[in-house]
Each structure stands twice: as C-alpha cells, then as structure tokens.
Amino acid sequence: MNLSFRREPVCCVCNPAHPLAGQEVSLSRLQSENIVYREKDSHAYEILKNAFTRLGYDLDTFNISFETGSMYSCIQYLKNSQSISFLYRCAVEESLENNDLALIHVKEYNESEDFYCIYPGTLETSDVPWDFLEFCLTQQML
Image 1 (cartoon, one colour):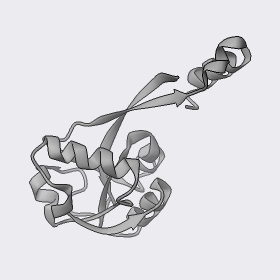
Image 2 (tube, one colour):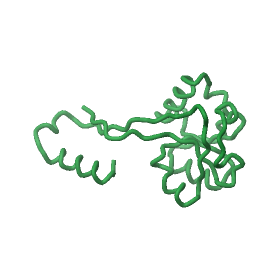
Image 3 (cartoon, one colour):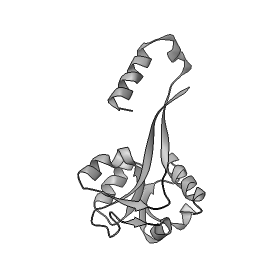
C-alpha cells in the first residue's frame, strides 16, 4: 500500500556564476548546455525523460556530460562547474538559500513529482506506524 504525502517541484539549477543563472530560457536553449544528472537506469532519469517527451523533446539529444548515482553528487558537482541539472526543489533548497546554486527558469518546464510512503498492509494492525508517519509528515521529514 502507499500513502501520498508530498508533491515536489523539479527545477533547473546551476552555479550562480553560470551565464543562465536567474534567466528565463526555453528548453531548446538548454540543448547545448552540459547537464549533470542521475544515471540512465534511475527512476529520476525516467521522470525527466518522460517530462521532456511530453514537451516534444528527446532527452537523449541533450548533452548529459556527467552521470552520477545520487542527487547529492549532482549538487556538489554543480557548485564547482558550469553545468546545469534538473533536481527536486527540496534537494536544492538549502543550496539556493545559501546562494551556492541558482535557478534557471525554463519557460515550458513546470514539472512536479509525487512522493509516496510505501508500507505493507500489516500496518493496519497497529497505531504505532501510523503515529510515526503522522509525526514525519508534521515535521516534514518525509
């Protein structure tokens, strides 16, 4: 079973020194940019690929110059490069607040992803797991 608990925007981010930082651009303008992203067999890659397809683009025609196994690695790489990435807002919020990263506003790209808590049906036999889920939701830990 699963419980939907959050809808998170996916945003385009870069180093604040990148020429497109803070700019509004079209998705086609980003085809020549170096993109840092998750590896091709990841769920995150599939989400981005499907979003691009819905917008009439083929993600494979973009320049993904560096693939990594984690969003944390993407963020660290972006802080020291002139690359861009598409990451969950919650993953980059602190870096944006600290001006370690900046947004690139992509005109036609307004994607979000639902996050779920997946649990076995046996949770229905006890209040303790539900209490924990409620606590996490109120603390925005999930």
